[in-house]
Image (cartoon, rainbow, N blue to C red; front, top):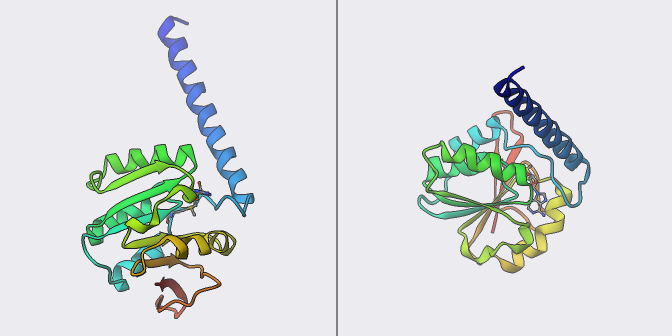
Length: 183
Ligand SMILES: C[S@@+](CC[C@H](N)C(=O)[O-])C[C@H]1O[C@@H](n2cnc3c(N)ncnc32)[C@H](O)[C@@H]1O
């Protein structure tokens, strides 16, 4: 084999190994429920319900706490012309998110930070979006209410906070509660 054959082979092996590493890393994250949330983006069915029924202020600002690949932020940027900021501690999430967003029409509206949620300045945003399991919502609930602006609205996909009552609940076509709005 010549130089370029070896080069191509090494490149393929490298890509395969980094993908394998990413998958193992993501799967391990699923089981660390108190500090890590599953590596799943908002489902299309929930995004569709939000698109149909959620009325939010156009041109406002939003932070997606634990944003993964930024899928939800691209939705908010698209439908509500929002400026979005996403925090995630996962390197791969940030790389994939930046890549997908760069090639989308919303690249000037979305910024990613590879940072722990606890470093986010929540007082700057009109909306806070979360798609996290109840155990993670419980872990961040008091911090959100302590640091957010009084008028900031929290949009929680699928799961509810325990200490606060939503002022609005959006149901899907089967009557299942899917989106919870808090102040
Ligand atoms: C369910 S996904 C979020 C999906 C995204 N919000 C959406 O709706 O498409 C959860 C993400 O939380 C991230 N995460 C877990 N703990 C975190 C922390 N302390 N700070 C920031 N991100 C965290 C994980 O890396 C994972 O990508």
